[in-house]
Structure formats: structure tokens, C-alpha cells
Image (cartoon, rainbow, N blue to C red; front, side, top):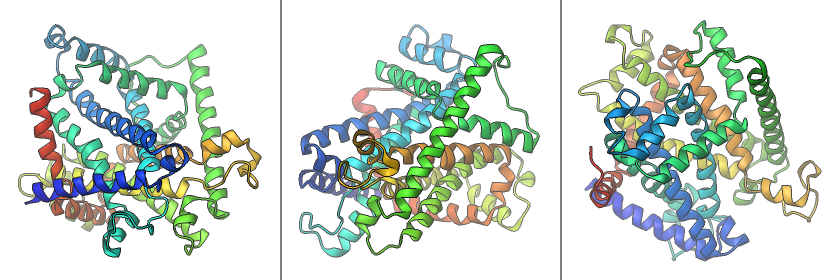
Amino acid sequence: FKYVASICLLCFSIVIVVALIFTGNTRVSKETNPWVCLVVMILAVVWLSMIEGQQASLVGLPPVDPDLYKDTHPITYKNAALAFKGDNLDRYLMGRQFMVLWVVFVINQCGNPLDPTVDVLGLPDGVKLVFLDIGLGMIIFTCILGQLTTQVNASHCMIDFINNYFALFTLYTAMAVEFSGVMHSSYLIQNILSVVSGKPIQSNEEPKSGFTFIFFWGRVLMSLAILGFCLAVTLSALFNGQTQMAVKYPNVPNGVSVFLFFFFMAVVGMLEGMQIAFFAVAKLPAEERGNSFFGKKTCDLLFKGNGENLPGFMIGRQLTVVFSFFLVASITGLNITPGEGENVFGVSDGAQAFLNYGFQGAVITTILASITWQLAASAFPMAFLNNPVTYILLCIALFLEWTGLCAGAWVLARVMKKVTKIQY
């Protein structure tokens, strides 16, 4: 029943998204053309599916000797040769994290309604509230098509999944994003947490020196400047009511929008950190896990029975994270028409048009709501485990998984596996 209901919900969500695009009720379709918007949306979802699936493959393959698949899967071998050299896997994961946020923000601009109150397909008010205002349609659409389906297959068919040039291109792109230095302020946070926790940073490379040292810390300073500018732009627009949030929900005070921005960033951060902490404590004996009241309740719930609640949490977590991503994207997307009135901080019309798409939100969310919390959880896993918020979010994630909203991903994964003929 869950499989059938989830697939029906996915089909309904696709119809709603396409209807929004062709009625010009999304940002990209309004400012360009519905067909352009649809093509960009499809390309973004396909690329997101590769980004998510490739992570499962590359994180799972290091224990496997590459010589075993060097001749049978030459492109997978090329992926592995680059990803597993030195600290490249860590660099890939950082670049990939920003790519996920960036692509999700693109999908949000292509498919999220500008005005949820506009009549679409003659939907009842209750249905519009759930699928448009709350955004369930976009959440199901993105989670099933862009994330969970390929994660399911790639986690079991690691070698076959990345044996293609699309995966190799995605790997090079992630490495280029990390090399650009936009995310390098995360390394500063990593060093600070290492000092505070007393845990040395593990590396497979020699310590940086000379030009490499200067180039690295120069990018850290550049990243801090970019992050500061993105925060300044976002907070200025929020306090002045110049975001999409103010357009969609004009009755929400600007101060509340600022609070929601930081609240959902914290939710994303907790869920990102919980993922790291749970996998860390999963390796510990039961008696060494959570020692507080909530720590014990969290462990009892997470590891009870056959441990099925851990993958269940991952699915529910994905739903919650995507929901928060879309909200942050709506909150940080600016609503300032270039050439009409004053641009934020007096930037040019071209720069204002770029800022309107809210990609500064992707930078903020990646650094402050994803990578920072992951690093903190890696340094202090028990602190996350003993946190009462962790137990609450775990219950919410497990409930969302229990509803079966994304159960259709298992169906599509099986279809995809048969069509592409990838093997375990």
C-alpha cells in the first residue's frame, strides 16, 4: 500500500510542478520561459540524483581493492584513482555538499510557487495548503526522483553505478568547487574544533608548507569574506522585507523571518550532525553509548531490534532536510527588481539579478548549517547523542519514514536497476 500510495503521490506532485511551471507561477518560468524552466528542472534533478548516488558509491568503495575492477570497470577505476588519492575524498565531500545545496536551490527556483494562493488545477484549499504552502509536492518530487532512488541503488551497486563519464564529470566538478575556496572557511572551523576537542585532524598528506600553505590560508580568508557578504546581504534583505518570504507571506513580521532563517538552519545542522554522530556511536558497545536520560532513550530507539531504525532515520532525515532547504531557499531568495528602486548595498543591476536567485543562501547553509555541524558531531558525537533535541528530531524522522511518503523510491530503484542492468 505504501509503495502504491507513494508512487501516486509522486505522479500527483509531478503534475502540480509542471502546472506551476506552465502557468508562470515559478521564478524561472516567469522570468524566462516555461520550456526553459522545465528543461533546467529536469537537468537539475538528474544531476542531483548523480551527486547523491555517487556519494554512496565513493564512500563505500575505499575498502575494496581498485585492481579488482580496474579492467572490468575502467571509468569507475578513474573515479577511484582521483577520489582516493591523498585527502581528495574529503575534498570531494565538501565540494559535493555545496553542489547539493546549489542544485536544490535551482530546483526550488524552477518549481516552487511564487504565489501559493493562485488556483492550480482547481485544487481544494486543503490540498493547496499541504502541497503548495507547506511544499509537500516539491519535497516528494525532489526526494524520490533526485535523491533516494539513486542512493538505494548506489549503496548496493557501487562499482557499476559510477562506471560512466557523467559520474567522472560530477567528481571533477565537486573537486573544482572545493578548489575554488568558497567553502574553505570550513577548514578554519575544523582546526578550531580540533584544538577544542584535542583530536588531531587525520590526513593522508604531508603538512602544508611554502606556497601551498599561503594559497590554502588565502582561500580561507577569501571564503570568510564571501560568507560575511552573503550573511550581510541575506540579513539586510530579511530586515527590510525584500525576500520571497515577504511576498508569499506578507503578514509574517520581518523579525519572525529572521528567526525562521536561523531556526531551520539549526534544524538542518542538527540533522547533519546526528547522521555523523549515529554512525560514530554505532561502532561502540551498547554500554559505551549515551549516558544521559535522553542519550539512552535515543540509543534504545535507534538500535532496537535489528537496527532498522538507523536506515529509517536516514529516509526521514532526508525529507526533513529537503523541507528545511526549500524554506531557507524561500527565505533567502531576494525580491528586488533590478533598476527599480535601490539595489542591496548599491550593487549593479546584473549582480542584483544574480543575488535575487538566493544562491548566497546555498553558501551560508553549506558552511554554517551543514559542514560546521558535521565537523562538530565528528569531534563531539556524545554531546549530540545526549541532546534532547536529537531524540525529538529522531522521533520526527522515524515518523516521516513510517508514513511511507517516499516508499516509491524503492519501486523506482528496482525499475532503474533492471533498466540499467547494474549489479550488486
